[in-house]
Length: 354
Ligand SMILES: Nc1ncnc2c1ncn2[C@@H]1O[C@H](COP(=O)(O)OP(=O)(O)OP(=O)(O)O)[C@@H](O)[C@H]1O
Image (cartoon, rainbow, N blue to C red; front, top):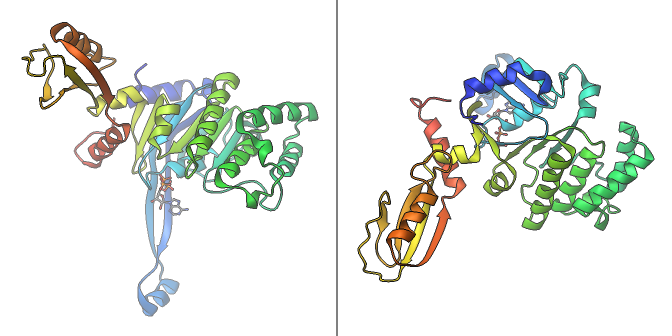
């Protein structure tokens, strides 16, 4: 299903709030800050006549996340991603608009929301710094009213996925970053919430720990049917975890759709490198634009997996049928380049936000 058309999406989110785990409807957040004036006289003036500035962090954002759906929120620095997560988790009150999580308003129904969500802010631990992780888990067990039996089963499951028992008897303050985030994740999800929010959970982690966390999240979605909204700057994370990506820039949703749609929209292509059996043979392959002819033949085919022609498959079939080929290699354009193109596109004022 295409989700690039935001108007359809708005309709969808508004009309299906009861079946949607996370709903944001026309959400806006402004922050008013006091500007400090330079120098001593400026500082004194600021005390008596403070100059206020209002800044829009999130502007009219509408989207929904279904049960058992994982959505990646992607955007440059200061795009408004964390502010959006904070509004959805009840940490910050929206200036206007409506948010619903598992059917509850996070600011009004705090108890219901606390039971329904698990939250991890990658930069900051939410467990007790001077306690071993396992003791923190026991405190959380009491807070959430988890039975001993359920706790035992959940801890076994979490340990199996996140290898917690290697370090859970050490104080949180002594854990490495990767261990700390895994402990945080376990603490936030002990009570098996249906909705999970993660703000840059794997920043700074090594590849092994990142992969552990990603596999765990996929399992939470596929087996427990959780809804996950995750922010990241890591394109690998996007590729490995997300199918649906919401791109946010300057507080607005500029694109909401499948990664493949994003790639197509911003001109991603496949690079085909062909080693010919006879390197100087004439090349005349219908529909194939040859980019280079020194050494192997290099051609680029637009990423049109969903709306051919010409599709990669057709281009490859043409090459094999038309030429005498020794070897073919196919490379995808980097997702990072695609996203950079998307950000640049939306930075131009004349380009529409869809
Ligand atoms: N409490 C606050 N008071 C004033 N301004 C704020 C506050 N929180 C966020 N902002 C501003 O709102 C804008 C969006 O910030 P936010 O942290 O949501 O961005 P982000 O997309 O998460 O960025 P990053 O990727 O760098 O973490 C920024 O300009 C930021 O300075």
